[in-house]
Image (cartoon, rainbow, N blue to C red; front, side, top):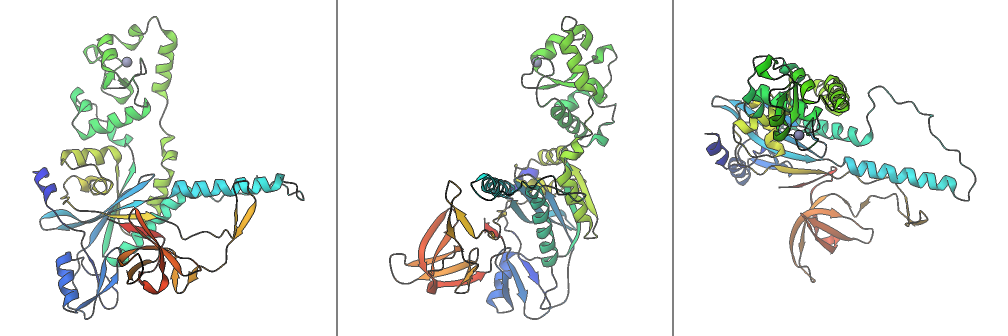
Length: 436
Ligand SMILES: [Zn+2]
């Protein structure tokens, strides 16, 4: 059933605004095209594609849920409509972060400043340990993730009627593991409880067999079931098949009678709590706090639950599909076959006026100007070139020069040296690049 559902092909819906810029229900592209052709609407934005009606025709709107699967490199986003026929994804996107670029830039700046201090110059004292960090401070590379996701949530709230959020908060939910009735096969493949426990144990044992350190394959009982061992999480470890068979129905102490050091190591790791995993997820908790400020209800789910929901419905693995499968509302959701909008964080340039060579010697100086001839790097433009070697029509993100000879980026390709007179702006730069 689920498989055939995934085969239905659709496009991302088009966002529609009333003449007063209040949001309406997103419509299918065919309907948007008809309205544009009939002159009843105009293009408001290219990415995400949004149209604005010229006259208002009855207010109708159906609230949507924005579902998020935050990741360190990519965050999946899905807008889910809850209608008479059930839940359905109407818009999907993947937001590609630039946390690593933020980190690299800060490292470079630090090195440059440090080199300047030690060069043959007037002494500049090192400035460190003289700053306090505000409560809830996150490194800029991580904060960037929170900020970009929130700015897209705000944007989608402007273009559609959102009424709730749903996000993946933790990779596994320790609250869900208190079920002593769980069966052995549940851990290997199957129930949500099993998936949750397995994800927890895999994290705790770092995917390795507790006994030999090779790749973990099975959930193993320290005190075997046959000898009254419980199904509690404290009685479970990960092991490889070989060690599991070798241990058979011995207890941990019997199995490792001759290896006291290993016995102590396993017992210590078994008792170690995973309380610190909350700190690892600080970025996600911060994102949750920021989402709550919208005033809409926020549903949270675990990563184990997401992958369980996705596998139950036999959907492919993709960030935006994971987003649709987050939480309890992800149990039953129709995911059509669509090309999600790819949104890449590009930044808005930097404030560095002086560029250095590879030795840190200043050799280039930039002007303060960012706009040349009405164009700015990052604008999405159309270029219709009528003369020269590059005759043709192009649409892409541009990179400007003071000379008026611009470069245009189309996906992976690039056309350079196009004169400014051929360009027409479609959308001003907003810190992102878009593709499908
Ligand atoms: Zn092993």
